[in-house]
Length: 366
Ligand SMILES: [Zn+2]
Image (cartoon, rainbow, N blue to C red; front, side):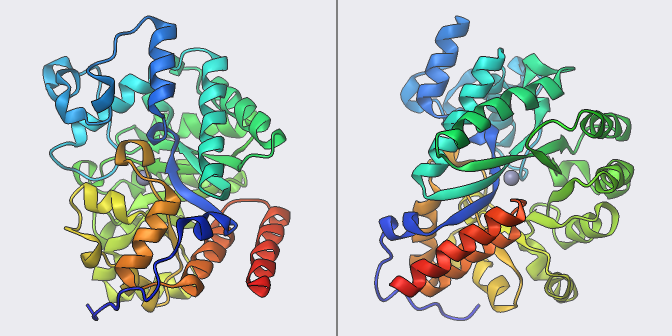
């Protein structure tokens, strides 16, 4: 890795917030604030699993750490010692959302949180398998979330569309039924099909979900796929060849395969990178070891995202500031990340044009 010069001038987070930008790799399940959890638990008469101050530190709560108490853990992100506990935590917290009003409130709170980081558009990933109260009613969940997102947009908050996520351990039939329901009902704001889950544990799943993703593509839904995290480059090839992914969530281990890097460049496939998530979950030891700058230097389209900001205790503006410090990025590089985030998003063309024009005007003025 080439030596990285430290940023000559620290980028002020307020300047970052003022840049019109999109976030395209963020899970709704990873954005519940403490105040949201407290209110939901109280409404449902459910006790917190431990002290509120350490609610997101799942390693401290027996209910999430001890597998015999598992209520059906699912998989998201990379494998690791703390992953199963984290996934049980996601199931617990999403299980507190039981009414359409509660779902709408969580969606509205998400848009407000995004707005506070200067995010003007989001593709938010929602994996209904975590939302226990809505099994069999996934379309109703989408409709309830859309109602909250509609209200947020009317109030001038971040515009948000939904990437409906399959779980990597679902069966092909389950995936195809989910897509058939989406295509049949076309719930408002659902613009993409996604897939997440533990790549390492499940192995290649491209062929299994090929039919579901082709049906989504034929119906005009976008496709974004978690890959190239624990699975390495093979997972990215799988996502491109079998699922016709338009974007790759993570994809950072593509750097290990020069032929794949060239394909990403040639086809203009964006990688939705989340350095803090990769470092926290142990994929790389620290920011300096992260391949983000190598991918950028190779000409790969890269967006810079948070993944699960609540349990990771971060915001997008903070992480952009950390990236600037770690990789020596100045304002021009951050403006390019902002522009790429807008171009790579699944926002409609009018909104993309408006946000890019606003970003350009801002640069002319400064
Ligand atoms: Zn993710």
